[in-house]
Amino acid sequence: MKYIELTVHTTTEASEIISDIMWGYTDYGVTICDRADIIALQTAKESTFWDYMDDDLTEDKPSDVLVKCYVAEDVAERDVGAILRDIADAKERSGGCIPFGTLEDTKRLVDGDDWIDVWKKHFRPIHLGAIVVVPEWIDYTPAPHERVVLLDSNMAFGTGEHETTSMCVELMQEYITPDSVCIDVGCGSGILGISAIKLGAKKAYLTDIDPIAVESSLHNSRLNGVNAQTVVAHSNLLDDTDVQGDIMMANITGEVLKMLAPSIPKNLKKDGVLILSGIIESRLEMVKTAYENVGMQVIFEKRKGEWFALVLRHKN
Image 1 (cartoon, rainbow, N blue to C red):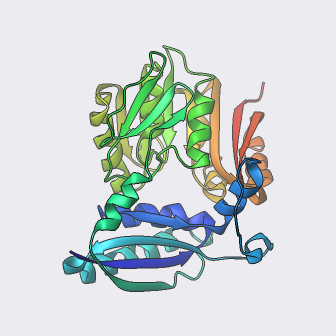
Image 2: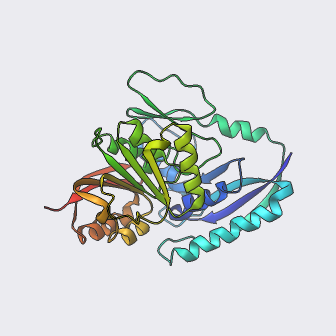
């Protein structure tokens, strides 16, 4: 079988948005090639060594992030066009808050599908405290203390492998109780809300503006048998202000977190905690200031690689 490999040149901030869009049109794999991830791995782990790394990678200068997907040749003309239109629409909706880069695209024909099996081999169970994120095609036997979250191989968004998602899953475990009501803003795959239920939370509300993300969260909730305890909404935030969360989570980019700062606290209980992730260092103070200005206080800060996560409470 033949495929078209579509490559889009973008930025770190927009790479996951573009990846999410691509996953709406392909079951055959999406990859993100980001110079920042290589540098973070090299500098954050003393046990990681490269036989050779281009000196250009360590220079402090702008660099393209490449996001690639594979589309079956017989539908490529239709689907590639739709992907590029959706990316352009996402850029317009961002209102300039998120840098999208050049969005230059290239296409090439790929013959054969051996690479699909190679791609799937890169996925493995990911251990995040008591949570183990497992691709649904892998047979995994958990230890007694572990809680398995299954993710469909054809759904993207957060998988737990990215630092921003893993920090959220790790941090929520410090606060969840059997009475917890959790709210996940920008739910993607549903990994955070599903993890909350697996950790013992009573209820989880998941929201996203992307209909594909809503479909993914619904599908993965059913896959994990927690759909009776989850509510998935196609919206920017919860429309029902009567819903109050003990724990709110938002794993989005710093620019979007800033934009949502005036709205997010209305659904958080006065003694609740807010976990924010997806923040690069250059946006960290901006996000902190935005939430301090609406009455929130940072009580904990976590870093993995280039990414930061914050835990906040209402100021007394």
